[in-house]
Length: 620
Image (cartoon, rainbow, N blue to C red; front, side):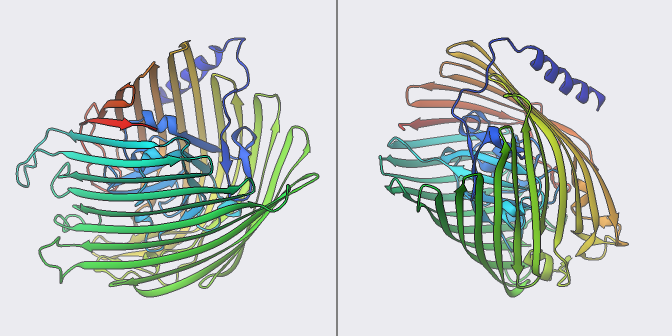
């Protein structure tokens, strides 16, 4: 690993000294981070926030949200089924249920199990940016934001037009355990947008199909997504979105290897979100929101051969309402809000359960003098199962110069157990109705350096999670059971830098390099010796993209390195080249180009070298 440290430091130092005297503060349109109550330019952010822009997404060799997120520094995407079939997501060493995902500020919480949280019908073409907030975020986003939050912001189209795209890919290997066919994947997508001065509408639909990359990993994925924005006047705006996804896949070794070799799963998700923004006065704004999510999960242990044995069906509903408000004062700004959430499940092996959650937010932001900025607030939560709890937090920054800023924050948060954690009854997995909620405390300090062609962020954090929930057992012959296993303390370092070289007006090179290190210490209150998830956290992670653009030609090379607490480390290298000719674009993706063998969950091997060729026709 010494070579990795040396390489990271060498690139950072080289980038720093390569600056010229003509560098100045970033002049491009600044990204505004949306936190439901406050909207903050990223240069003024006091937190460790990482943004993936639509321009970044366009260049990356991925067609799904899951594939895009695997290039994010500090984010751990652990796939069972690749290319968008199923993936767990976590931030900075947390579990996959300790990160909350939001769509335009509306929480996407799967109360059955977070395995299905990323089952979203979002085409990457509608994403304006992805905001990744690291650390406990209860005072900003409420429950389940134990280690971070990922907020997906969609585009508001300014022009009208259509999109048609298609692709096909293969690893050119044969299914020797099955029918002997060559593995392949294909897809087609169509969309239309209407961009007017006072209203904007988008609708997209797609179909993806593959016979997999090894025995019983075929999938078929159908999506539809709609979004509408209406500006009633300068003071009132309405945003609505809705979507549906039907995702079916072979689940060989996903949950109960080796007995589940022929298992299959189908997940159907429907969501709808309606929110608005109103300026009551020049200094007072309110933002109401209501959202609904339905999820159907059908798992068949024996596949389609015998539906009377080993079949689990889960029907989950959640409805949420939220009202946020901000008031500008002579010195600072106050944000406050309230939320209500009802969740229920009807399940063949979890049972029938429901619960309610009520949360109250309060925040205050001010600058005591020109270069010092402070945010402090709290989140008061009532849950019908876990009663009253309170989660305060504070963050601050001080600008040493216009380009160099020190940041620091202290935050707390909680994670309420899922219905699966509490009530699951299967042959190999048993829930625990006596679980306590998880709680996190984190402190962080770091700095941000921002010039026109060079940025660098460095952060150190300490986090302690109490009542950590994991699935444990003493012997491999007994079932897994969910337990409050103890306390998990983590010291972490996160480094991220970008450098841009402008060769000419039409020629540019971008370098993006990130490194994360996690040192975790687990103090267990249990005697069990086997753990499902804790031992698989990341210890070292390197993410790097280098892309070159000349006029309408783009070439990107991406490298990812992961070393987990247990198991072998691995390098994954991906490549994309794309060429646009007026409104037509053709692209070639090569993923895992050096054919690495690697695993992200258990002993599930992920795809070998995979090539895809695609084309897009876009008129907006």
